[in-house]
Image 1: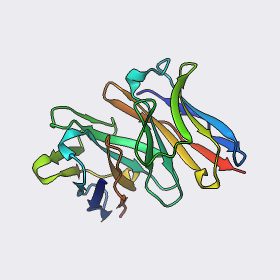
Image 2: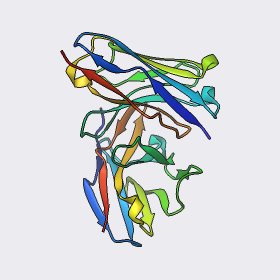
Image 3: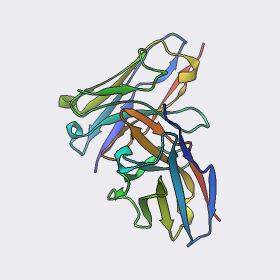
Image 4: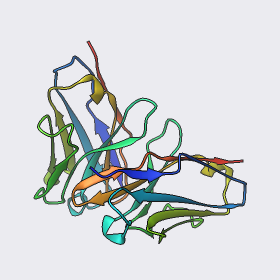
Length: 109
Length: 113
């Protein structure tokens, strides 16, 4: 089973920009791995932010965007708000082998 | 807007069985893959199983294959997870999730004697 890697923790200042990344032990992350990004706050179910690399749902704040950068999937937050403090998970699908990353704890401080 | 409402779960002894259900509304259930995801206390998310919109493809996490069975009934807009031969390491909050973007509220499964 593939291993999906994320930064364990990141800090961003209010109003600042931060990029979270998602890598795979099998090689470069491509759109064919259908990267997803989820946000989870304490005591809550996760919420889907991004699907298929860069697509947003109707509830996804415009300040979040998804892309591929340097062989990894990336989630960029532009103009961080205090309510964006959460754990962010990526998910990759390797031909039926679906794997979550370990999550990035994002602090807005 | 779509919604997933879960039921089932609870406390079970090692070796026991449980069935989780997930009822969908507000979106075209039969048009999307469905997933079960779990989260052990204080840990990250772990994918458990998924099923294609028509049930023609099913995949499992290695550690649950042969013990868990995912199924769906598109006529009832429902997803199921039959869990047999439960172990302590299966203790977790279980979530259903659709590629349409919606998550269930979660249901706690505790395997303990």
